[in-house]
Image (tube, rainbow, N blue to C red; front, side, top):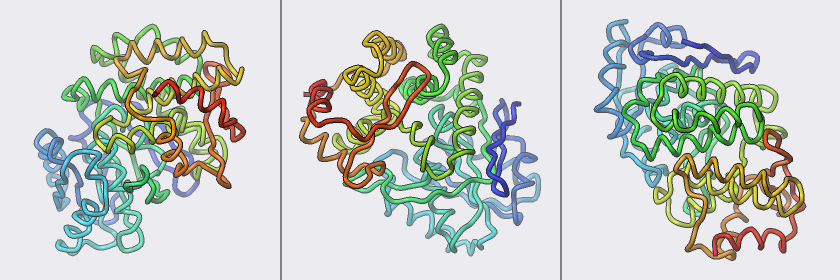
Length: 359
């Protein structure tokens, strides 16, 4: 097991990465205020891993409440969130009851938001079971639900007490979900670590084949990168915005086609292709660098082109982007492989050229 730290003063917390961690209650017990937890999961993950987690906790004398939600991005809304609150109230859960998110990014985001708002704040722990959640969404305290007009528009910054990533859960991950997770891994290399990006180019096939050693390295390095950024900019007022590389375009794709049609990682992958194209058009990187990123994304089995959404529709959806300031869209763009910056001065004409990729 590898343990990293997200350094946030009194709200610092560990990230544990290893095999067989779902059965190790000792990683959870130090973070409990009382011997009662509510495990929030979904209909896909529950049959696979809920019994193992419940068994380890009950053996340690912890009462476990199961909250099983429908699976899918299309359920990341107020209605599903209320199912969590209904169960917490039915079982008379107090403010000291720890919520445990057992699942992917949707489960993690909704559990975190429920914890942030239930009785004005309950503790929670992330136990991510997908690659995307392990390398990105479980770390950093972003919690949210979707709105029909925009992804993750309603939420809060609320940090977990711990992140526990059991690498064995990736063995049951469908290939499409594994590929979607690789988008966020590639993102970390593209914006912060050129050497890691090169390593990904050399090891992408091993990752796709589920090689345990390669996946462990990808998860640990991604968590290291994200933890370092979050530690210096928890609320996305500066460098943390770089972690949104590809997301302005990607969130528009998810919203425009309907939540659940595109997986988040698939939309981010194409968003990175579009952001790299825009970076090249602005003269920030060479076209060969944009092509290099696009090739790696394609090798990961992720989409590099799109049809069926007009430039006007893209603009309409991006106008609701959370990163916009004073009515101006802000884009995370590449300065080099391994280096990114945020720009708010992209001309409509230049943006239109990139959006033609989706015409």
